[in-house]
Image (cartoon, rainbow, N blue to C red; front, top):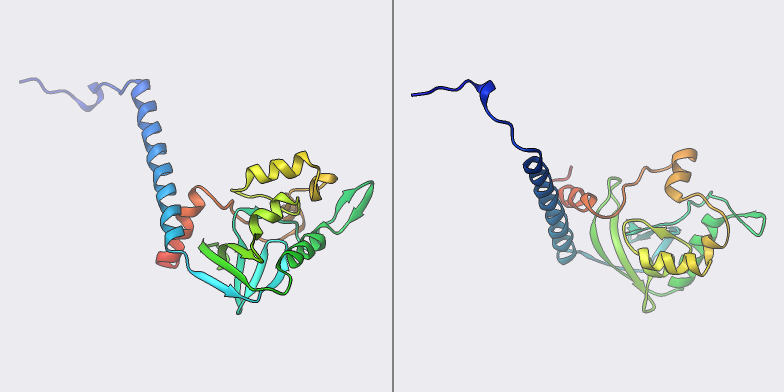
Length: 198
C-alpha cells in the first residue's frame, strides 16, 4: 500500500481552474436572471397620484419610489448647452412632471434599493416613464434602457445636446446617495433585502 503526502497531490491544470471559474460565473448569472424574473412576477402594484421628487424619483401615498434602470441628474445639478450652464436636474424633474400630467401613475415594483425605496417601472397616460425619460435624453441608462440611450445620444436630445457629468459621478463629487446599478447582482441583493430585510 502506497501513501502519499498532501504535498505530493497534483495541482489541477490551468484550463480546469478556468473552466471552474467560468462555471461559477455562469451559475451566478443564472441566479441573477432567475432572481430578476421572480422579482418581476412577485412585483407589487403601486398606483395613484404621484409627486415628482426629481427626474427619477416619485412618491405615491408616502411610498418612496425610484424608477428602475435609469439615472437622472440631481435637482441641483447643472449642465452646459450652447455654451451656457442650465439646471439639467430641474429640467429632468419638469419633464417627468409633464409626462405624468395630472393623471394616475401605475407602477410595478421590482425590488427595494439600499435606501428603502421601491425600484419600479411606471406608466402614466399610456407612456412608459422609465423608457421615455432615457429616450428623451433627460436620464441615462442605469442597468437598463441602453438602446433608448443610444437613440437619445445619436439624436443629441436632452443631456446629450451639451456637456454633463453622469449623475452617479456628480453625486460622488457633490454628495448624494451612492446608488448601485439596477441590474445583475443588484437584483439578487434587492431580492434578499425584500425576503430577509437586510
